[in-house]
Length: 384
Image (cartoon, rainbow, N blue to C red; front, side, top):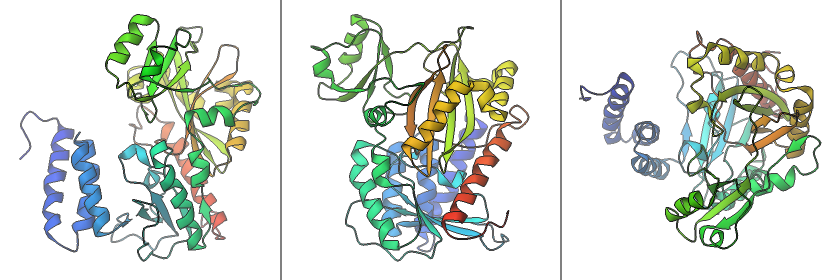
């Protein structure tokens, strides 16, 4: 039973794990139980167990089907996502962007050239993998698999592979009012001899969500960072650009592109330069939440026409059916790009009483994704 000291959320996760594990003994439910435990173990902070459950699930059945309520009406559309094994950050959480009328299957691709299992009938294929240098072969394999289906395909594995931090820097070069800090691939050993100009940003090559991220302000900080880093470790070094506004706060905007059209997702406001939505604690400030809601209602007014025009040009330049952007607006009105990728989290699970603008904003993104799928599949949307 859950520990008496466990929080309600932790207790619920322990119960979910206890309920799912007995399903492993039933051949009919074993694969789906492993998929469920992959999710639960990540939430419980047990990544090694999570990846082990995912590997066992894929071995039993590489096609995962999102459960549907028994009383749910027939699906309006059916999508096959192509995913790579990994944690939650490895792939776009497509289930959060597809509402209940959409039946979602996920084909997990472990290695190039593997024999494909029988695939369910679907309307289109969606390459849901995120960029990572270690997944380049799988991204190209996703293109091969998608092409063999003969179905409409959303996103391109080859295009996603081009969204490395240095790849994005080169891709977006020349866009008016768009500032993309130069990204240099270095090793820890090389940094001991070739120093960028202080201050600069360091992060591991495949890092996301701030893992291993540091601002290096001087030699002492660099020595401390390198002391904890293997000499051959691959890193990205980039100049630090101070994006504080006049009130001393840092603002990070998240935008989703659906069929190249930008939609606001959230705004995180913090007094620290290293800001993410989870550490901004927006729930503690009504004033900051009101500012976020203004952004969700009217991103052009919130960001300024100069920056938003750069956002629109960026969406056209990356030319993906779905992608995400994390960015800021510099004091002079230009856009500062942090990251472009396809696996960014988009959800409406924040408390509606505190964040009343979030659900309508995400609903607009979901509707746009559904409309894009219907259009590419040659189907008429039932919402039309």
